Length: 173
Image 1 (cartoon, rainbow, N blue to C red):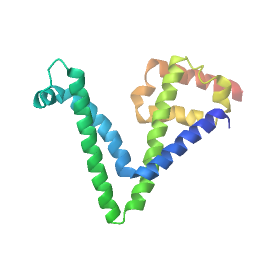
Image 2: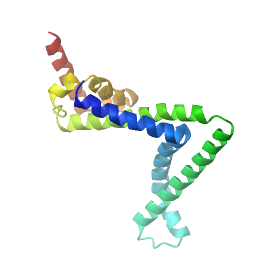
Image 3: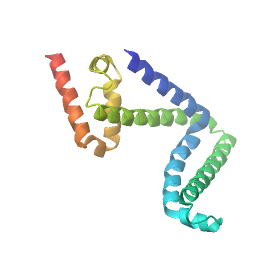
């Protein structure tokens, strides 16, 4: 294990703690709110601007207001559902599922960041010796392309994957 493994463990540990503290419903709602907020803001910001009396030239402000309204609405709904689960004594399963979801979401985010970093640096960041000495590098690197195959089929990711396979075969020979 090297510094990269420890950094990954720390990030995933924080995600697990946050997932437990917030619970599955709020964790999932955060993701849904982000996606729904962006979608609603791109499709309905002009209607919201008109409804609240904003100048049509203030598109960015209308976008932000729409995004925040959706974010707040989804968050309030998630808190209500969490309260109902707690009342039904399903709080612990909600929190345990929150751990799993939080860790998976963070691993996915780290995987995307790692793939982007590798693509941008042509496979040199993190350095080869760090990649080779890490126990979590390869599984984390492969996680996002497994979930989103299109990422794995992009030209630069494919090239990085081939380079890593070539390096690995040289190490085993």
